[in-house]
Length: 311
Image (cartoon, rainbow, N blue to C red):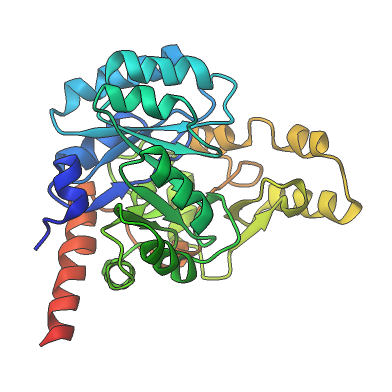
């Protein structure tokens, strides 16, 4: 039952991606997900090309399964990382925060699968015309940088508009969310926050524990008036952002307050001043499981639900 457009396209066992989370999605996490049958994804974030290259070399020692590289098109190292991905022939490239532009054609010539993150139907249509192999539709329920449309509203509209596979993301952490996404027409799901709280994830335990103890109302979107809104768990940092928003502070003040905040959370475990990027489904997560256990619960559980519904 697991074989569909996306598993056939990428040669993976299960139609599940691990989200590309900056400072979180390293070779260890991505390799564990790929070994468990999903698509593990290394997040380049704003890292320089030499770090990305070391992570790619590392994951190829961890797994012989397909994996992906998430490239932020707003990164100051974008060009170097895009060229590196071409040189190393990364199997799958996920692009976010902008269009992959001319790189898409270059990657396709190397038989690299290209899957842009699309915040709207119009962007998805454009990516299909450019030759993208699939698209990821991420709703505002997701952690990190978010758009305005919900997963429930965005996914079926994109599915109806394009012919390439659609991966649903945002607000998916268990079998019920995955089953809902498949019923909306998605060929696969992308999961971030649930994998953040996995045994193989190198995130500081303080961060994981904060997610586990979160409730449904504990995430907030900061920076709406900057044009680059981010969803994270409420803490002292989000309170500072809230004050800046009320005063209409310029973007550079937000940058100064948030500088290094994600590293503080992920590496140092500073849950007060760090950026605890997490999705609205943080309140659903009650334990730390292995990547294999997470995939089994989400994907096999989803198909069991769909099968029981159809009886």
